[in-house]
Length: 310
Length: 327
Image (cartoon, rainbow over all chains, first blue to last red; front, side, top):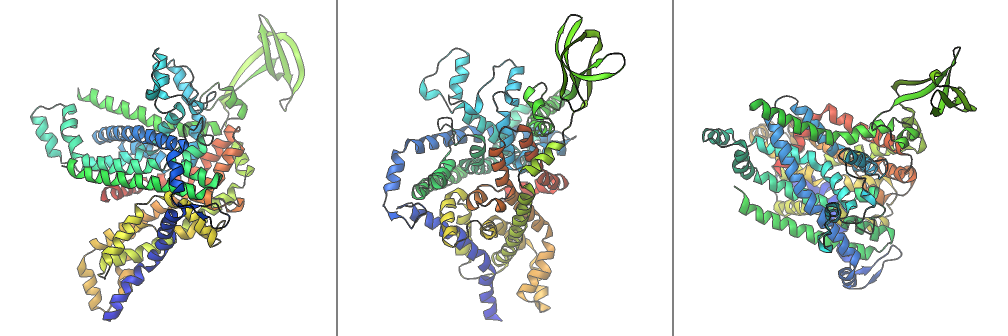
């Protein structure tokens, strides 16, 4: 009886462990190894040491993809946090139609990225898309969106007659269109997480603030924002990690990360190097760089969390 | 003041709610238009059927109005099939009538899109892959979570952190090497490439473990006195008490595999192995100018998940919220 008890735990974790070792651990380790090879599917490849990493550091498209990815993260993550917190706070105040709004906000999140990418590609069509029609209603001229490689800040300021210097141009309008779509897609999830977080804040704080005569706005800043900060950190980590992995939108909505590589994100670049031009060694090196980046950010965010949490 | 604030709240929620839902409405309404109606861009959403007739006193004939010059109009007379029968006829303008009828709904687009590429096969593949990996995930997760949640063994912490750290590595990182691996074991372009690697889900293991741990110890003590085996406890006590969390995990797993795209795109090539998302993406390339068909295909590809969502929206939303907070 006693020995059976000792063996059985391992038997219970064995199926999961075997699959994880075979299809996670081995590929992760292989990814590291392949990155030191000149590897295309023919044969086993040639060991070239750090050469892939050397190429990577000098590869302008790699840096452009990294830059694009940073723009996506830097705009999408805060936008998603601000809007979803706003929705959640508003939703938390109403009684009627609450679940209807929740369904509506959550719908984009459960639908497939492929289908909604196709829809948004057509929304951003220059001639027949919904985006330009709506812009037309408010008197803004049609935009090229997904085929516009010039920066979004540059274009905005150009409209009011200011020509921004190059380093302030921002992400291309094409990438901005992708960002809009990506925010739209993920908003519902973050809203639901915030809504759950808000329900954990005790009403006592608000009642006390009410007696002290604090305005709703002040209550939001002084009570809600600090007390919801653990949720904000969760949302921040999750949204950042997910947006670093953006792929389907680029594959479906753009012409191979164009125009002029301005929508080429890092995961798309990995895919392109790995499966279009079959430079799998190089693609693995890029994947490893992305991994280190995500790992670093996760560690940084978790450390920050300790300081900011209440 | 309070009513003002509450109406403002509703106003903002409605405006943003519309932003969330308009892409779907546009998708469906475009799917119901003819390509000509869409290209004309006269209306944003489903157009009304509009045409001109020539009422010459005895009969009404469908016509195309070419131009109107004062009291004379130049028309093309159409036959029953809508082809031009008589060109450039001059008739009095008062005999030309503009008719607006019911919205024109072209449900035929759905059938056309569905038959254009083998969507039935794609649906079948997706269902097969989704359910097979669901079964796999449930079996491996229940077993592993049982060990992690209710047993003590040497190396438990080690395995726990090993699993946890593997969960931190996102899919794109090991995509290339997985391809190389599956190529080496000759699994590329097979169903098992789509199923077996996804028969384990670390998140589900942790979700189950959390729940199994929370079950009262007394139940297990009593069962042990009755001579219940280790596996018997899992089968007779844990599983019956875990139906809600199993349902939650199943929903996550189904939505996840229904929508998964990058992996099947890379690992399969044969058209008969395409899952729905991959098939849809190929259709997006082939039919890029046929907007209405693309929208029809997008619509029916999301309908099954939306039905699942609408029927279980409360549980689904609550599950996502709970799972998120637990992390």
